[in-house]
Length: 156
Image 1 (cartoon, rainbow, N blue to C red):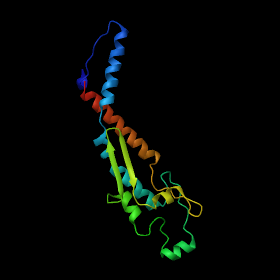
Image 2: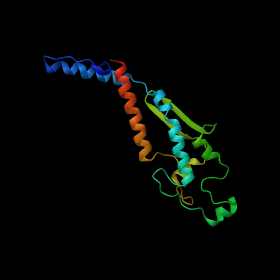
Image 3: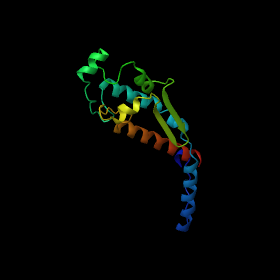
Image 4: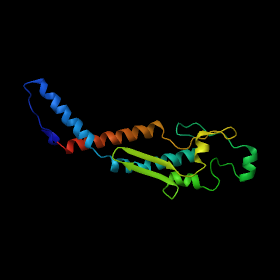
């Protein structure tokens, strides 16, 4: 058979329970650490897109800056004063939060004021700047699905 697939004829369907239990055990043992680590550049590119378009992950424009804020900053670039927040999301530095485990991925920023922009407040409009659009989410899903198939094939 192709790709190392083994064919076996079963005389009794009750044996399928054992086959499925074996696949489930193999699935539980899969480690996605490297797969998820390899996805970090895609997330960084997604953040770069959001900052360039001045929009959230879904493409909704961030609320404009007030004239007072523009005058104080000297420019109208939203969420950019020193570049610290943007740099922490588009690249890796001391403010970047990046971690992977066998089944998890953590991506974000340790810049303290980030949360206030992400959620908004009484006098601060919400400008979501951390997140994935549906295309990036689909790409991550496909990447993990492919890794799952490779991992299950490797254990056969």
